[in-house]
Amino acid sequence: MKRTNQHLKNIYFLLFLSLIIASCTSAPKQENEEAPETNTLEDSTDEDDEQLTEYGLIQAVEDGAYPMYTVTVEFPERKMIQTFNLNAEELEPRIEQWGSLVGKYASIKYTSTLDPHLIQITKDEKMILGSTKIDPKWNLITGTLSGAVEITSSDLPSTIRVSNEKGNVSFNYYVDDELVAINNTEVTAYYILRPNHTITSIILSEEEINKETAGKNTEVSEEE
Image (tube, rainbow, N blue to C red; front, side):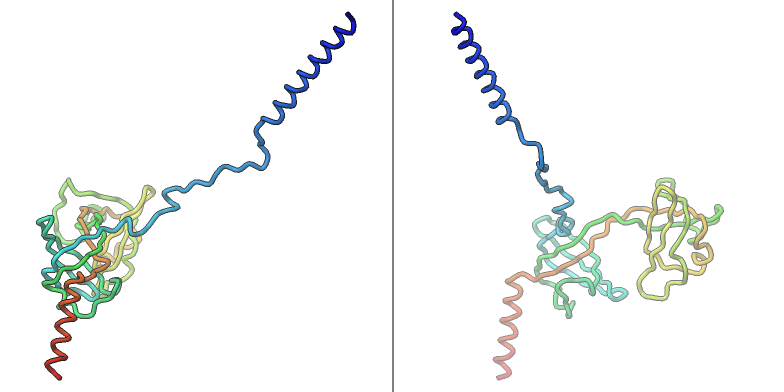
């Protein structure tokens, strides 16, 4: 009887020991474990995501204050005509003869934004930019004027800014002596948001390129 009891005790002890060993081997290892790396939207941000691409017919190219141009494009599929701004020095690839683009189809890459357009600035309730009456529907910001250090002497406008503790708004504007006089003082700027479409790339269609090549070959043949 004693031997039987002892035998049972041995069996229970072995079973208990087996359970302990099994729980140890199945427990997850926590040392030296690192969370898997994940890709966020910021990691995969692409500048091209902010640009749009359209295929259209270039109707007109008008030059402004260099290097700025205005380009009018018709989009037949959308049945609309859109006017774009263009900086010749920032365009990729570069284009030398702008007049040659008129009447041709091209793939156009551009950005579309809403930019603040300055209409009036007041200082101590005095209108600084002419006598334009203020529309209550306009946006406004009150803060310190900066950037109006000197009168704009170039063909392109200067960039001025009105800032306060909540933020700032920048404007492209031709600075005059009245703005210089109130630089670094508190003002209220009234403005609206205007759509701004800016071309970053113009690539002629393969058909248009073939036409140009054929035309050049014809001219060479006639000269010979």
